Image (cartoon, rainbow, N blue to C red):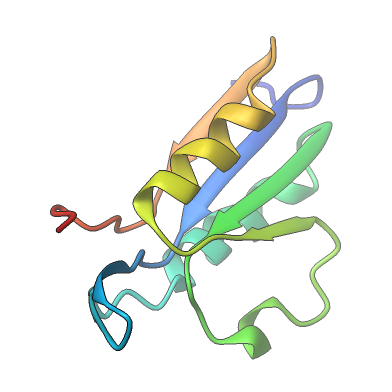
Length: 101
């Protein structure tokens, strides 16, 4: 598939679902797979957006594409929904939580 006229959204990393002000449910996803996919797609598409959960900020250093940080699964859905447009490719490499308390 040619991506040169497409907007590409890649998701990566975990999400956090808060139980109370000090505890949350999450997973150990690093976001590295999503970043690898975003890096590979960046030079082949019109626009690339990486929407990610809480990941190590050093992994995002020097990225030339737009990175949008989110925390919860609902936040990730809202960020994706805000970016929807025609000619869009969505690659879901994130590990969102399976349960929200």
